[in-house]
Image (cartoon, rainbow, N blue to C red):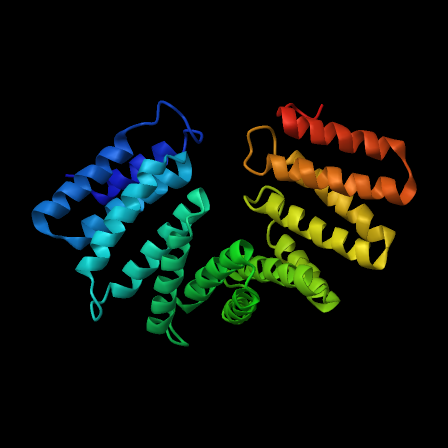
Length: 310
């Protein structure tokens, strides 16, 4: 039967395979299956939890939907074994809610998102102010509500997401490991609200928060491209309103930096191509430089054909 060291070794091996790799080492899957088999024999819920964690890891690294489905199925089983009052009830609710949101992101099934929101609300009630995991619950529920706003356009969901995001940021001050992600997520929701109401104060705050998040994500950080991309969008929005050329120039500069970090095959490649092309077209409209328009056209064509930019 697998040990904790077995799990660690197999997870490390899996990291060496790129997403979608056909020859994925079956070791981690074997460990997950063995853990589940042992759970069925002994009823030891820790084995079930570790099996769920491994299936989730395989999905996040490899993107194989069957692994996510297995994580959801086993997550439901774990929740049934941890009813209200059980010490692991809250974490079982939370983990299942997160996996349901992952499945929503894959298939956009609203039933998954609605269930995730319901579960996250339940978890939040079990994590009152002062609870160590309250920030993660606030953060995760805010993400779900933002997704529902994007899907349904109900402003109340966006307002609640902003409120929860502020609460999460207050609980994650500078130095907290989640300070950066709290800054980033609140900034994104504030930009959403700006897009709805055109409140410049929301946009200014979003820019301030994105700059702070970017400082915490140095070059080479996994989320560096996202921060560049999001700040560039905010600056482009600001230029559209206030017509300050420096904002547009910075948006172009950040857009180029983001694209350089998203080579062909990168999950954010398309959006980086599209956004830089849009910034360049805006600059063409402002200054009439044909070279900007030509580059924008080339970037749009690269996006359609999946060709390299050069």
